[in-house]
Image 1 (cartoon, rainbow, N blue to C red):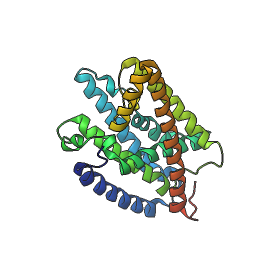
Image 2 (tube, helix red, strand yellow; image 1 turned 120 degrees about the horizontal axis):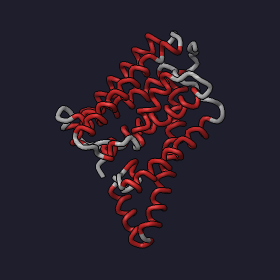
Image 3 (tube, helix red, strand yellow; image 1 turned 120 degrees about the vertical axis):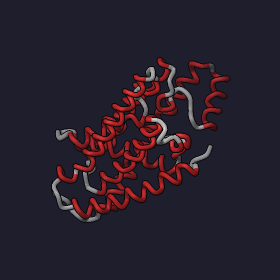
Image 4 (cartoon, one colour; image 1 turned 90 degrees about the horizontal axis):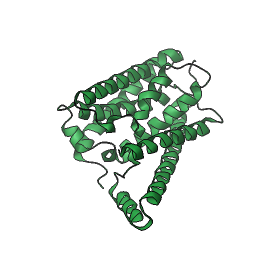
Length: 254
C-alpha cells in the first residue's frame, strides 16, 4: 500500500506550492472586493471542471462508452457542487457552500495523505498521452485549488447550526445512489463494489468467504458509507479550522 510515488511527489508538491502562491496573491488583490468579485476564480474553476468532464464523456463515447466514466464517484461530485456554489445565489447557498467546502476538504486531505489512491503513477506518466490521464490528474489538482480558494477568498461563512446535518444528508444520498449503481452495473464507483486499498480488500474477501456474498456486500457497503460520512464531516471541521486561521479577525464585504 504505497501512499506516495515519485510521480506524485514531482507533480503534487510543486502544484501545491503554486496554488498557495496564487491564493496569497488573490487574497491580497481581492480581499476587500465584493463577494461576486471574489467568487470569480471559483467560477472560472467550475467552468474548467465542467468542460473537462464534457471532454471526458465525449472521449469515452467515441471509444465505446465505459460505464466507469458515469459520474457516480466521490470525486464526480465536484462537477456539480463547485459550479453550483460559484453561481447559485439563493436561500440554501450557505449549505451549498458548506457541502462544497467539506467535499473539497476531503479530497484535499486524501491528496496530501494518500494520492496514490486517488490516481495512479501511470496517470502522471501518461499525462500527455491520453485525455483520460490528463483529465484525471488535472481535475484533482483543480479541486485542491478549489479547497484553498474557499477560505482564502472568504467565499463561505459557516452557519452556526444545520450545516453539518446538510453535509451528512448529502453524503448519505450520494452513497445510496452510488452504491446501488455499483452493484447493479458491477462497476466500482466510490469503492462500493471492491476496495482499492489492498489490506481492506483482503478483509472484504475474507468476510465474504465466511458470511456469503449478500451479507458481505451489505456489510461492506455500510462500512464504506460510514467511512465516507465520517471522513467528510471531519474534513468539514478541518475546513472550518482553516477558515478561522486564514480569516482571523479580518472582515470582508458581501
